[in-house]
Length: 378
Image (cartoon, one colour):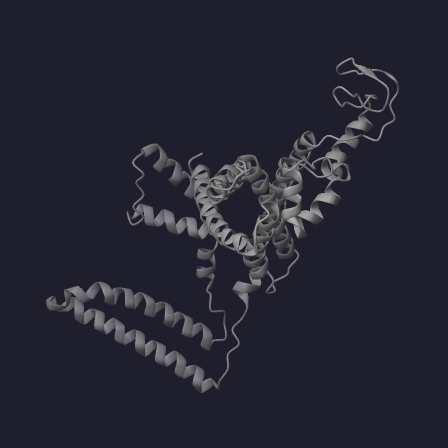
């Protein structure tokens, strides 16, 4: 619950920050006089010199109005921007780059709000549902067939143990011992699974469930580190100690990683620009500014896609829409945005979309590793 409260606070902060990039009328009547900000003559609702409303409020109610305005309103521009972002991203990017900007939410403001809304949606997404781990196995066959399954598993495991004992006793078979030890461990797991299936129980034991949890995985890594199996040595004792501390406090580490992710999400923009620049380096009248607007609007759309998937998951949907939503929609959107924003042919937009989608996967992987490291060593 505390994580959701923090996420809501971050969302409100992002909305207010985005509002500063997209100031608009406050729907308050003004009066002729001097501007309170720059003292220029004012003859209407807004100062012609600095744009500040001529009527300045000093009420608590107005503070609430500004908060709600920053959180939900965006002066009506959102209703013109979002449909284009979803269905005609190329037109949105092209219009904004070539001067038609007053009607749309600026890309920086939209990026800020969409990213923070994405992390706000994440706060309502829990781990894998219990039903996936606790669902009983539907056992078919007669009792005699289930008993035979158990007997065969026991017999196979006993033969593996005998083979391992024989290899250990024979110096000529020393090279076989390591492989047989692995086979015995796998056989033991298979034997346990066969016993559970024959008894009509879940394939995943309570011990396995604990290992699948975050705390269980962290405990396994800690145990491996203590035994020297993890090989944790970054060359810095301080960093090694911080990583071990992170393994001792997995929930705190995850919170830090999430915090770092949205604080440094802006890095996705400069990380995306080199690929865009390389794809258009020989094209005249295409500037780095154009690529920046493209990247901001594209990342805003990807955030909307993740918000939709997170919301569906939080509401309990477990259908097959996630694969096309997360794997098919993004590259198609890149194609449409490239084609319209840069006035490309179908072929020109297609090959660039393939390159950009591949680069996006690599960039996200690099960003995820970077954020995980920052969260662990912080």
